[in-house]
Length: 101
Image (tube, rainbow, N blue to C red; front, top):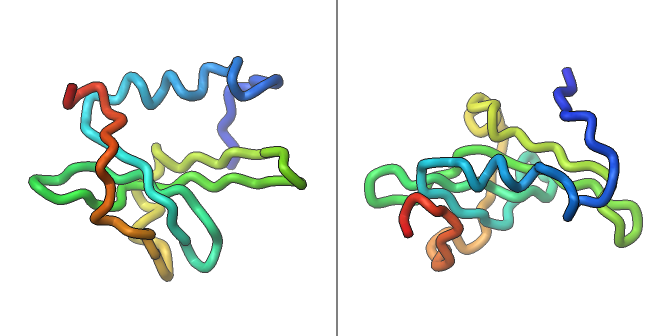
């Protein structure tokens, strides 16, 4: 199943990032690997700890990003992963969430 908004054009002109801006819970991004594939790991604050919540996969052709696969609305992704590596999970100092500002 592919769910998309049908947007075609430059990423900086898309409504994509507004989705994250509207999240009310604190979140951060970390570089990681899911099942041996590079990924961006969405981290959410649970109590006093940052925990992996979901993943975003980016596909490139040369230097151009050609696909963004965002699984933020698929809470089963992290538990279903065979392996998950989050690079430097304790160095998540930059808070990108408007909920904590």
